[in-house]
Length: 502
Image (cartoon, rainbow, N blue to C red):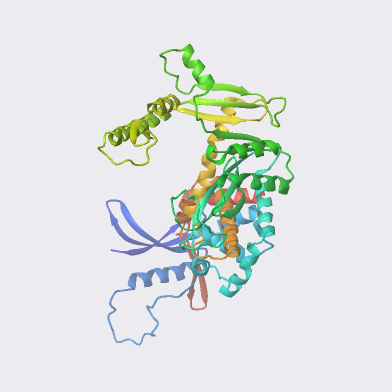
């Protein structure tokens, strides 16, 4: 049988609860709210009793009771107070309130995107559900062009750079992704090109620059048919000019580097740690195998190959590292075995010839390319890195390169948690404004994650359940809220403490 009870909380208030069932020591408890004086306590008890009575038939005793007796008390306001306040603290700690010149529309769009990414129009519904009075849609549309301006995004980028504490030889990670549009017609900006998602629709290319921990520093959009390798240098040079940096250490994957790209980076005098494509077995690996015939390369072994600049080279001295890992070799060899097996079937006429690098076509003759097979097997398990920083160590270089998972994480957050694909936008200005909002939301999200140790998805999903409600009882307005579990109280305190330190 359900009943109402009162218990003391850790803060000294008195919580009113409904105990719906109690079996074998387990209770189903509904929290009504916490009272800080006798008047609030009686009002909360009234609310609890009315909830118990709801849905139950009333026995008509013929008394002239007022019509509203036993009816529910109206909730006049309901707010995701803990969630909204925490996100607002992060937004302000990063300086975005100042950078956006106090623009309430921008704050609402950024925080609403974190709570539930959706269209700009539907974000007004998200704000209402969060208990925040949204601006009008007309006001929202009027403000959007401002967010597309370079100066707006540059102010936010400067605040992000200040947050991470840029300095000499700062490590910056660079990568790109593509965002497609559900249309079949390009417009000079949205154009078909190489798609990481293997899509044929028009797309844009988005370049993201982060610090070594994956905190966003700069975002730019490029035409969808622009080669990825040509996006890096313009972004890096613009970033350095904006922050008056003489040098940074660029960390990027091998897929971002072409020979001309490498030359341009060297010509700009920049430092780098880059992944390397290895078309041939490196000399140092060949030399090791000659000296250790029949021996397997030890797991984790690193080969070091200095690459000094010549007298006419316009570059710094380089060092190239090649690391062998057993697990990487095992995975690669498994893939080679499968491809060679299919190539043999194709050569024997037992399967159609599809894209297979081990099938060699000479006129009308098909053979298995054993020379290529031998070379790829010799390279299995070997990963290459190149750097031009002064006095590097192998682990310094390899560890820095492995931090690229942080920028991949930021891209995943932007594309999934923040729904970065601007599916509701068609013009370049509206797309640029959308990316500015996503950039700011990504920065706030990374700040929250760094502070709490929780993913932004878990943080929003967990904290949004705890609302603050206002209940009108006659002339009295009651504020009621569910008690917070200890873990949520701790992370909210961590957010407040870190925000206060800024």
